[in-house]
Amino acid sequence: MVQFRPFHGYIPNIGAQEKVTDRVSPPYDVISKEELTELQSHPLNVTNITLGGIDGKYDAAGKKLDSWIGQGKLVKDDKESFYLYRQTFIENFQKVHRTGIIGILRAEGYEPEGVIPHEETFSKVKEDRLNLLRGVETHCESIFCLYDELPSGLVEAMEKNARPVLEWTEKQGVTHSLSRISDVLVVQRMITELSAKRLLIADGHHRYETSVKYAQENPTEERKQFVMATLISTKDPGLIVRPTHRLLSGMEISEDDLINRLEEFFYLRLFDRLPEMIEALTASKETALGLWTKNERYVLLIPRETDPNDMMWSVDTFVCEKVLLDKVIMPRAGKDFKIAYDHDPISVGDKIQKGEADMAVILNKPNLDAIWQVALGGRVMPKKSTYFWPKIWSGFLYYRMK
Image (cartoon, rainbow, N blue to C red; front, top):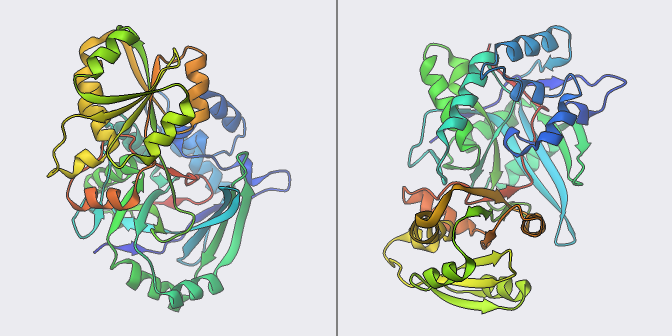
């Protein structure tokens, strides 16, 4: 059981000379330096808050956010509401819609029948996000959770009562729209249905765990016991999960030596062309990894030894970490060795060709059922095991805790 509630959202008041895109942004952790410079050139853009820390402190960002509200740049809804967040995009040459429900979720930690995680987290990131909450006392971004589904009658009532608020289209062609649901009867039905759900965190583990700690720091302040969350059904046709490939650089081992070492732990299949290797990787009935080197070697890797009684051996990122990295790469990694992450195969190839990476580990698309199975089994996948797309954007709705 979870507690998921409506709230009085703060929404950008878009001026005559403004665009919605001047105010909003992708989530903080996927913004490049170049993108951040462009976004922060707009004085009311949310990144001036979420990435506006000075020496790790966000007190100045908090004062800036206060001034936006004082000047009427952000306006508080007069009714407690849930919000529908729809994203429309092209996938496999077809137009697809994905719809989320935004409310506030009590941050009580992980529970088998409540909120459950599926990935490990980075402690340094959580420290920064905690400083953000302390400084601004506001959730400017939403975490992303999955639930099973709602009764069709309730979904129809939600759609019927949703009132448009904002809409914008980003550079990648995804159209985002926000609607408000404030009808008392519909809101109460949503509270009842959604509070009976078990939720799987798809994106935002760091922010949820940070919110739990922030709630514990402020036990007497009810508003600070919640985090803004977007809930999306696992049955939603627009629920897209992509792999996150690994880029390895700074290697102190030749490719020939690497291949010899790999044969101790993996069965190898070598291919002349990348598409052939990816086709074999996709078709593999066993957990497999693809290796793409700067010298245009394409190798399919299937582990020689697995544990059929351990569900984690069905997770390719686990095999990558426990066998490829721990047993083959890390013992021979130099002081300049680095791992980077990229979900876009075209970008991966570009980085290899430019010499920014020695090789890439290509992974299969994660299986949603396997993600649930691992999470319900009380286990977590390695960091960066999934990439849910499109991302939940920031700055179009705020949850104020003051």
